[in-house]
Length: 219
Length: 219
DNA sequence: CGTTTTCTTGAGATGTGTCAATCCTCGTGG
DNA sequence: CCACGAGGATTGACACATCTCAAGAAAACG
Image 1 (tube, rainbow over the protein chains, first blue to last red):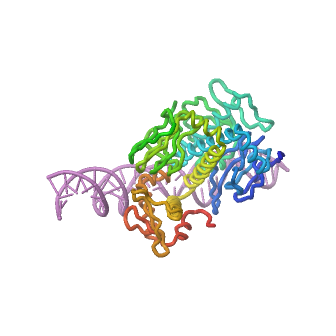
Image 2 (image 1 turned 135 degrees about the vertical axis):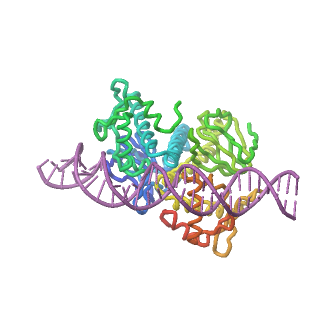
Image 3 (image 1 turned 45 degrees about the vertical axis):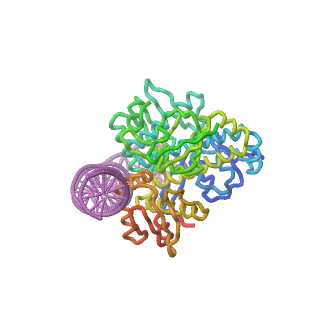
């Protein structure tokens, strides 16, 4: 009833419209949920991190593409027995509900970003998100499992982390072009709000300065 | 344990950050979920129609503003007993899960629209959505309850309906300005894809022509 | 190393936003 | 009944943020 599957970085795990024999939980790696229009415009809809769930109980066909960003391991369950499991153990159902609502909140926060924020605010928001996430990961004692993904190791008062994705993916996440992403990063760097020690390595000397650029209310 | 509350059109039902004593189900009327930035930029995150659910089991504070578009009646439940109810009747939990996942799908479809579609595609998408929704409503025999909201009554081959919201709300839904909304509607009219018999009344002679403007794959 | 991918930067085009004037629609009260 | 007023909608002119196209530079990779 339960088995594992692996995918290499860059591989498409699920194509929109695929028949879904199983549901799954992501065990290791990172994957993205995205949707692509006929002419190639694509929008990332979410990130899948370990423990995140893939597939919708009750729906047989994939609504979106799922792509592995790093090497990915999935823990798959056959659909029917899994739906039984949910029905019989209320605890599991509650947990899934919780996760669905978290994703809904994330999607809605992103709607505000996509619809109303400027390019600079978008970039700042993304950097803050990654900074917070890697910080949370280090606090929880989670470390990159041999893939060198992210480190929240503080340097002085600053925060230091790796960007896990290319400029193009950032653009697809933010509803921008990759050139605009690059330009805004350069501007934030010129303004002294971030430092780019290499293309993918970011240092944030003062997180409050960065947060002030997101357009969000500070609290 | 269960009681009703009414709100007038235009009234704010919930402010972001409010402490939520109850959860509720929308019985009659229309409401919007939206988020507003400090400087007034606002993004609509969703529509609430009869039978939709308000409030998140497990979270005590509102994450978004909820505003009545038409007069609204809510059926409210105290939080604790309601959470009991979910736990004890799996059927209810499943239904809520279903609704949450539907909202998630809607939010993600909107993310693609907000992040990647042009103004014209956005308008066409919204018109298609309203057209389909009012069409579904008439097919199901649901009629506007004395508020004259929407009618899918076919004229010849065309589809006819009322826009339930102002240009400004359309703009907030689509991540545009109201001027751009107005201009794009005029252009679609000039192109013969829609007719505007009055400011709020739309006739779509051929839905396929409109659908072709949405940027979505036809199927 | 050479090759390829990724990233940066520039110049110019363009879509959407901003500001402002005017028009339409509808409800209200004289 | 009509005039009036207020909110909603349209349209124009212009500004500007972001996109497009293009050339190179930097890093990654075999």
